[in-house]
Image (cartoon, rainbow, N blue to C red; front, side, top):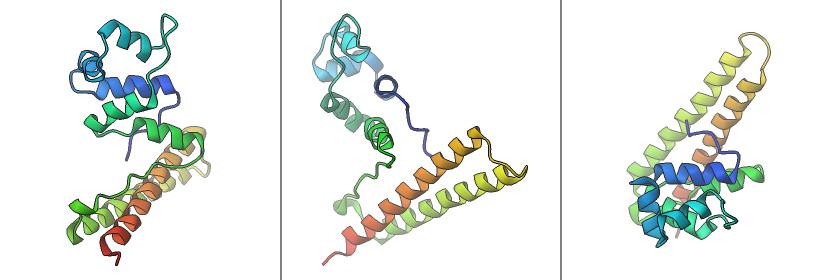
Length: 153
């Protein structure tokens, strides 16, 4: 299952920095900022504005993460689904996506079954169910768009 969606923009920035190879120092260098200036922007200290969405995107493109779009989509009750790259797709890729979707649906069903054993669903179980469901919906949407992209006339 996918990691839980982060709740604040600061958590997003922190996660991006933690995931960046080489951490703060390398992230600062990648953006062309002195470390102190980067820290001020990243942690919104010393009256500095936060890192821009574009700066975060640059860092996330190199780490392969999607913390910022996951966060933003979650604010609106949605899920982020990256579009498939038609240059890298074939029928084996489609099959792999199908299996991934089935696994994620199974995770939702497993969590639901476990939660219902005592006859009620508590708040922690609700969070787990919805996180797994978001991952399943995103995987299914990604699977369908990949089929369309690969087989479009």
